[in-house]
Image 1 (cartoon, rainbow, N blue to C red):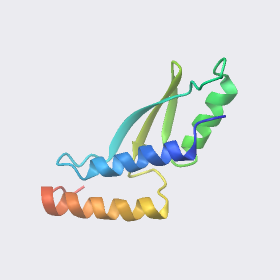
Image 2: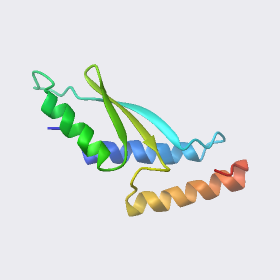
Image 3: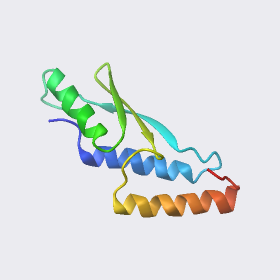
Image 4: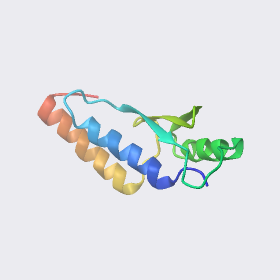
Length: 102
């Protein structure tokens, strides 16, 4: 089984939360481990399915060791409605509190 949509959502939501900081970054990097209890090996099919799932949300991913390096760019990823609302709040906050105009 590949990574889950919930894991991708968590990466996107963490990136949105980081946007509210003084730095106001729109890009975050993550490492998602593909190892799981009971899994004997990481197959190419598993890697491809996981990368394809990331791409379906506009998130970049590439294999690194036993996992994936994942890059979320809020300017290009696909947000669900809740994330879009969170994004609007974060943009407003970083502009009003930190003076960031992204």
